[in-house]
Length: 113
Length: 107
Image (tube, rainbow over the protein chains, first blue to last red):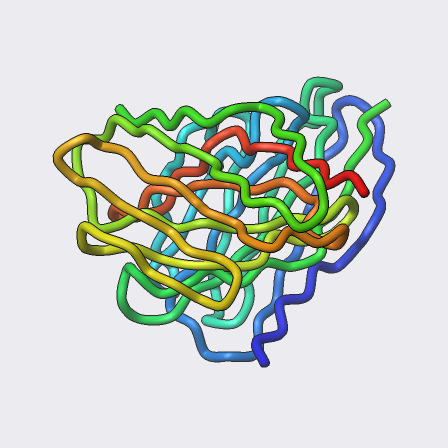
């Protein structure tokens, strides 16, 4: 079974802080994704990566950056956290072809005070 | 750009059949996926349609019509445990999800 591990289940940070959300997968998948999920808006793609050191913007990249230094790890960075970034953050991975299913982590519920 | 539309809520009774529709607009398209998410849980993959037609997996079936930019998820013999949110997603060079349909199954 694919294991996608997100570093924290719940996280509380303050406005202006730099926040790191970590995602690690154990299946050697090429593709990794970061989404945020808000009520009524579904899952919105922030950034994704097809390979080490490679990143592509999704629909809502503003205020975020990512890092993929190793294949198994994809980090989401909130450069200067703001209250409107309070959300559930989900990491997902997929391998190979584009029709392969995505496997999700359990999510990090981030609150910015 | 890309957009997906699906109903926000659907209610049905145990044992019934329910269909959740999804219409999409996209500049590129490889296929349509469906995911299930229980409250507090992670989304899990249900099915994928790359070609027109029906794909069946047990009680769940998914349909795609590329010419109509339309698909649906069909759930048969509904059980209480099927109460969850269901998301359609367009597979392109990445993945775009709809806002989700909350299904409530009543006894």
